[in-house]
Length: 538
Ligand code: HEM
Image (cartoon, rainbow, N blue to C red; front, top):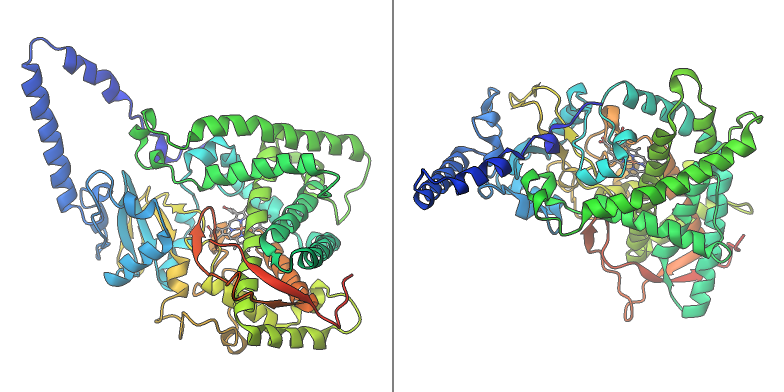
């Protein structure tokens, strides 16, 4: 497998050479050591002072094209690590790019890692669709959690192309998405009942836990063909939730050693390595157990359209056949990607609707007139333009991955049309949040106005870089259709069955963000869910 440059460099040599200096009798130890340190420090300062973009851009790395890539120096050694390691990185980067007019491309350093960030649609397209940006830099935690064998982090090559082919022609094939609709409906029905019960019991609803449970069950159903009952399966469910939570924390944690490899020898505040080592056997045991059960049950059966992902992977033959450990990685990744994104996007939509009763009423009117006596289906939902517009406007204001979640890595020098050249081995980010909030790209970017999408038909699936919350190009999100179909159906049903009202005194809606693996509401949405007369619960 190809090694990615970020953490693999040999940085151990100095550990072995330093003791030689300390032990030396022939040198005037203290003086020589002090001079060496001073020389090293001066060199570092000089390199930093002349490197636009910071220390990782030394030796004119940013000046290889006819136009050089501008950017902040940050601090010596650390570059811009302190700015990005806390708070809302997408907002800090947008402020930096806007204040310096560096929206096309800005260079900066994360420790010894050279990074560029694009904050305009044109450069973003060039980066995301370039074949030389089809790799990803891999974090230590992702590597330890086996994700380098899953779709999201596998390096661009035969194996990754095979996984993408399996994803598009088997896992996310349109016939399979249609066949899994019954499961989406079932999870939603259970969610609506639980919401109604909570409203009766407490007088208000905390929506997040319902969405998270529905999303987890929905993805477990599609991937493993297994759905949980909150009461009967509470123990197993808690174990699964705990593993997912731990995985999210490990993948989402900002690990300084990813950018300063030498730090890993003495600084690991999150105990990332130890925790990964503990989690992997638990994941393997769970997933392998499920694979074995499928093997016992399905040996002679023909694969049906509503087969789950395990059945699909087990049915593959010839060059498509995956090793068992690779299957574990692919299946586990689906759980990670598929659960939080759909739940948190639905929560953002509902928060905007609670804050805007007029938008909610307009949506209810659209749904009521399209559906009379039957339950809403995916096909009905696809014909509701205002609903699509509301979801798109939420994706614009609150993209779940404001920096598109995972960065890209250049595999050779890439010449951009504006004259800038991004050297090989550079990490590239796209600040989708900056693009969707840029007044040069969107009129009134801070206003929540779904109507803008009724006049302009914007493709959010990667075709229009003014709004590409699922990325674009070869590594575009393979689950985008599943994500959109799920969120659209759930929002339609939540709004059809309940009137959502803000509890101004006790639980005012707060749209503050927190950036973890994805960007979610800092304070979970609490609102009144009043059952609507015409729409009886299923
Ligand atoms: C609202 C829902 C979702 C959003 C906003 C979203 C967003 C994204 C983004 C921004 C990327 C990176 C794309 C790029 O680099 O160009 C991505 C990659 C990916 N997503 Fe999604 N996603 C969603 C739902 C899902 C679902 C439901 C699944 C699967 C069950 C999924 C599986 C993946 C995988 C496997 C990748 C890695 C693709 C690769 O590197 O080749 N996503 N997603």
